Image (cartoon, rainbow, N blue to C red; front, side, top):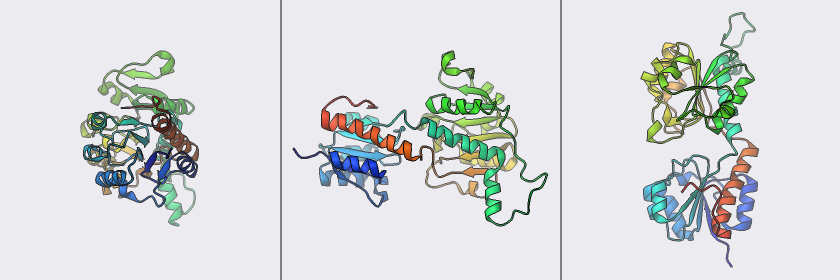
Amino acid sequence: MPKPILLVTRKLPEAIEARASRDYDARLNPQDEMWATDGAEIARRAREVGAAGIFGAAGDALGTACIEALPESVKVIATFSVGFDHIDIAAAKARGIVVVNTPEVLSFATAETAFTLMLMAARRAGEGERMVRAGQWKGWAPTQLLGVTLEGKKLGILGFGRIGRELAAMARGFRMEIHYRDIQKLPPEVEQGAIYHDNEDSFLGAIDIISMHVPGGDANRHWLNAERIAKMKKGSLVVNSGRGVSVHDESLIAALKSGHVRAAGLDVYDGEPKVNPGYLALENVALLPHLGSATIEVRDAMGNRALENLDAVLLKGTEPPHRVA
């Protein structure tokens, strides 16, 4: 029997491409050409090769038009990500296309990134690194680049899921007080002493730092806006390693300029890879290029998880373990 044809939209880790090529007629993207940002191109390539599955990634344009244009041969879409807001789930269901993701393997790494950004913002690490590289450092001085400590600060975690809870565990080692806002209060054994807020006013007013871990989509679009920033303490820190759309850039930039927000650390952006130029002119914001899960161990684990799901649908005819639609 011929192997199922698998359309792979992005260049993946070597071990994952090797496994995909072993078990499938894998049509790879070795140069990581960015054609997957065009839904019409994804559909065209899927039709051209008669793909049985699409192995995509975050940022792929798998919207309504793309999915409706896919050939009947496509049975499953696997995304190399936990988030799936780049996929039109309703359109996939209407076509009978299974959608799977890669949860439970990247929480710690993404929390590491959030904590890195929190430290960078608090201790002005980005400014210091740029100073040294530019040859502008004149030596130690008593008042040079004074930041703030994380010890004793009240960390507010917006979205207390797997990543948020991993971040809380790290923060406890820095003797931080954990507050969280979520849909509902979690059991004490999950909270581990974290303080729940059932409304955003008490949450925002209590914390010194906010770290955002909410899903994308319209429900959370521009959640952190001027009105909510105004409810935070003067000198607060803002960290976002969740979804770029959850921050209203102009409001945060204004708060960073005024000093109401002392500093920010961002790994994701609204409309990325474009970054609001207002951030680039500010010293008090640390900017990373969406590094959340970027470790060798995690990316291999994500790829293997995606292939496990693809194998279930295309090779075994069984229910995939991580189906979202």
